[in-house]
Every structure is written in C-alpha cells, then in structure tokens.
Image 1 (tube, rainbow, N blue to C red):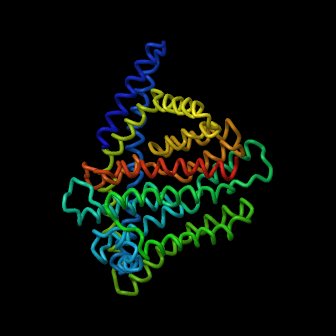
Image 2 (tube, rainbow, N blue to C red):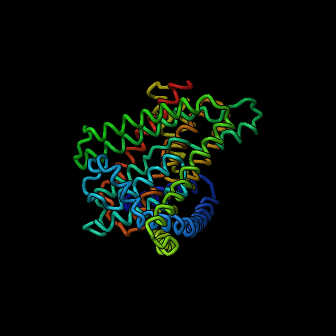
Image 3 (tube, helix red, strand yellow):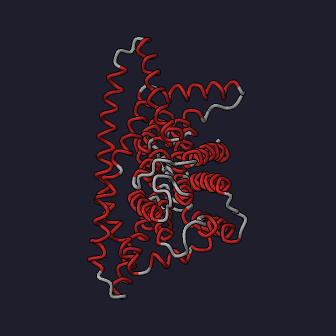
Length: 414
C-alpha cells in the first residue's frame, strides 16, 4: 500500500506540475526540485536529531528492563493487552514499551514517545515470524499510535497564545480548545482500535476493554474539572508540570529500583544507549522517501486541487462550508506534522485565532496524527516492507477523527 501511495504522490504531482507549466508557470519545476532537496535534507536532519534522544530513552528503558519495572508495567496492563494484543506473549517487554509510548503520547511528549515507540517496534520484531511483513501486534500498535489519545495539546495551546498576543486579544484563553481536542482525539483512537479489531477479529466487548474506556472517561472528567477553570498561564504551567514531572519521576524510579536491586545502572544505560545510533541511522532512507513524495504532492498544488474539489462538493450538497478553510490542516497532518502546523498558523492568522475557523484548525491539529510519517519511520526502523492493512486502518482512523473534530467544532463553537 505504501508503494502505491508513494507512486501516486509522485505521478499526480508531476501531472499537476505539467498542467501549471502549460498555464504559464515557468518556475514550477524549480520549486519542485528545491522542495525535493529541502525535504531530503530535513529527513536526514530529523534522523540525526533522533540519535541523542534515542540513546537517552533506550538507555533509560534498558535500566527499567533490567530493574524489572518494564515487566511490572506489562503485568499491570496485561488484562487489557491480552485482548487488544493477543499475539504478544505474557510478560514480554514489548508490552511495557508500548505502555510507555502511549503514556508519552497522551501527555504530548513527542520527544519521549518516538524513541519509546521505536523500542517497542524492535521488541515486536523479535516475535514476528515474518521479518519483512508487519505482524498483527505491530499493526495494532501503529494504528493506535497514529490515532493516539492526546490528553494535553501543549504545542497547540502555546501557538494560540502567541498568535493571540500578536493580534492584540486581551484575556484570551488559549486552552479553551482543551476539551474539544480531547474528545476529537478520543474519537480517532476508538475508530483506529475498532478498525483493526474488526480486521483481526478481536472481541472488544469484554471487561478489561470496557474498564479501560470507563477509566479514560473518568480521567477526562477529572482533568477537565481540575484544569478548565484555571487562567491560561496557570493551566500552561500545570500542564508542563504534569508532563515533565511524570517523565522525570519515571526516570528516577527506574534508576532507584535498579540500584536497589544491585544492577549496574551506568553500564545498563550505556548498553541501551548504544542501540540509539543504529536505529536513528536505519530510518533515514524510509523517512526521506516519504518526505520527498509528500513534497512533490504539496509543492505542485495537489493539496489545493483536492481542497477545491471538496469545497465544490460541500456547496453542491447545500452544506455549510465554514469548516473548509480548516480542512487542509487535517489532510496535511496525515502527511506532515510541520506542514499541518504551518497551515494551522495560516488559518489563525487569516481568520483570527478566536474565530470558528481558527478554533477548528486548533482542534484538528491537536486531535490527529502524522500517519505516513509514523508508518515510514516505525516500519523502516525494523525493515518492514509489507505493511498489509496498517495504512488502510490508519487512514480510517484519520478520516473518522477529522470528521469527528469538525462535528465537535460545530457543536462547541458554531
């Protein structure tokens, strides 16, 4: 599937470029070529930038693994994971890595989530009978990762506050999209989980899974009542404290327990950190391949044509089209996180950060994920070339999440 999508991006982009050339745009191929070189460099820089972070987190995870805490985490979530990941052996360290990755994603800590996710993929590859083909647990993990629940959209809140200051808004609450974003990301998560469960014939109507949803609903309610009434500055401070405090506490816990059990903590860290460089370098060709294809599609106006067609269809159906200006954020987020962030800022600048379009763009940005990036990086890290239905389920989650975010935006702000 990734092969077909990649070829389509390149060829559709080329056809669009030729069409623009025939219309008199003599610089179109120069822009495409510049975009190719820029994104190739970006992919290389991203991969190298991961070396330090990967070494740090793989070292920490090795300490947790030798200290026995990863196994403990696996046991705590075993009832849920046995239903959702039936092919992972009981007590396997992959379960602990998946839990850590999901936790980091929920707190919006991308720098921590990515290396933890790559660690989980390497452990899942150990139990994969076909080394070039995505296993069922890998697909479930990646789809839940791309549709992952984000409790706190820290970056989006910070960007909104910055733009509000530039636009001279007084008393602006940059965190007022907190609850809508939380609901939007939960819709996406459920869609991804259900899509893969249907494909893999997993029964979700069981006590552990239902208890998870009940617990998450209680957590949403608790966070809302604790944070909703705070001023934006205080909320941002509490959000930062919650995320960073939890991660630092986990690191301290890993080190303390390992030391108490007589483990050589320093050597364990170094042993795990050595893996970081190899993983980061290994993903370079996969990441560059995906980024250059996206660049061609975006630079040649393929995304613009798609949005124009959607607007025409919406108007033809007699529907309200106020959401269309924010729609490119959701479509781009599937392809590129930084590209979607740029489009979100553009919408907020053009329509106003406190407008319906500006709020909807923020909800979409905070409740969707970069599916193509995640699949390219994670599968590339373990040399998976046959992704089976992973992309299809990821795109289903993205589509349902995008529609859900739009409906939630209308319900809250329109």
